[in-house]
Image (cartoon, rainbow over all chains, first blue to last red; front, top):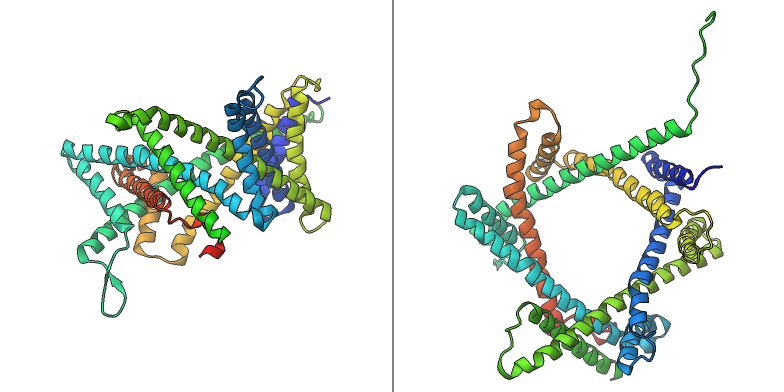
Length: 228
Length: 228
């Protein structure tokens, strides 16, 4: 009888082949593998969230023996917010209450995003880019210049010309063109790195399929030569 | 009348929660921000901010669980109605139910095989399909790069493909391509670095603009369609 590990290897082997069958075109096997993946991922996410976040929270608040009113309120608040978010789909009357729950989430989410953008990205990157200029070599000047050109490319302010269209100033246009070049090179390098990464993964999968095929399929026994 | 009242209340709630949370997060980094009489508010703001963040993260977890339950219910209903693709829906539901069921049985010590089914499913199904899909991406990426040059040849497209080829060529262990390595390293250190920083700064600036819109009550997500 096959062990659990062997069943696992068989499953992995078959699923890899099912996914790779997409190279022949969209087909039933590929779709089955993708739906299995979606189901397993959904199941895992539910378990991880339930075990790692919700159960500890409930144990610390609602399920505490002799819980205080504060603990009960705190424990029930997220459940109430979840129910209020659902209220919109139940009836149009729940729309207003649902928006209040959404407002709380948007408010806190905005604060977290703002803090992350300012303290996590903007200030460290600006300081780091600026510090490089002190080094004084060509690269340390090209780096901030490239950053400025990239940012200029993404701004769309322009003067309105008599024909009604907008036109950028010449020097802004020049900086934007340089910025476009920097962005194209960046995306090209990221694209190349993505190809290298997927090539590595593909060769690993292919190696696994070949190795499993050798193990799973019976190897032909050499027939003895006549007269031997 | 009632609708605009709820809208106003939602804007007010979003504004208050955003300001309190942001103040708490900033105070975590710079405790000397508030001075004099305002300093007495500091512990209170920090406590409220921490509570809001806790409620926010648990509410998001509850929302994800509700979303997963909804996904499973939709697919269960679809597989029951025997409409097109009902088989795939059934497979998705079955996969998720298997993961959740096996986890429950494992936890209750009802499985006698001794194997960790949950880990096995994660390694042999989820990781396998994930890595096979990532390997499959190789063909899409190469085909995409080919399409860039086949459909429309221009300067930016050529620069993009040249960068991709340079990154790929420098990764090959061929002595003939060794001169490409320093060029690739410079490209990654200066223009790619500058482009990536520019894009990240652009994202951070856009986040701040969106956050500021919420803080001044201009965000549309808090209003219902009839308010506008």
